[in-house]
Image (cartoon, rainbow, N blue to C red; front, side, top):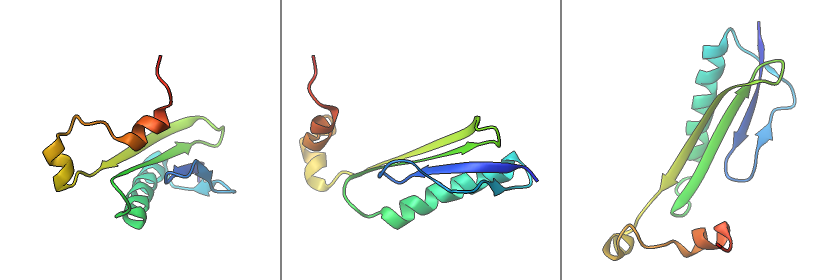
Length: 99
């Protein structure tokens, strides 16, 4: 059976499994990656207004063959009253200074 490396990111940086995982085929590996993405979201939410999750699958040679990302963004009643175009101060700090 082919082996695949799965790398996940639940917002704390990429984490890989030490050993490649065997799957019958690419579809099984990518299906498992999608399930991992959903489980990361379920485990971490609710926890604030924003979260980003990601997963990658690489084949035995290290070539990336699949990538999926999930972005979560919530707005409270107050946020909706201000308008969706209002800047998020935390997001502005994370981006750093602009030229």
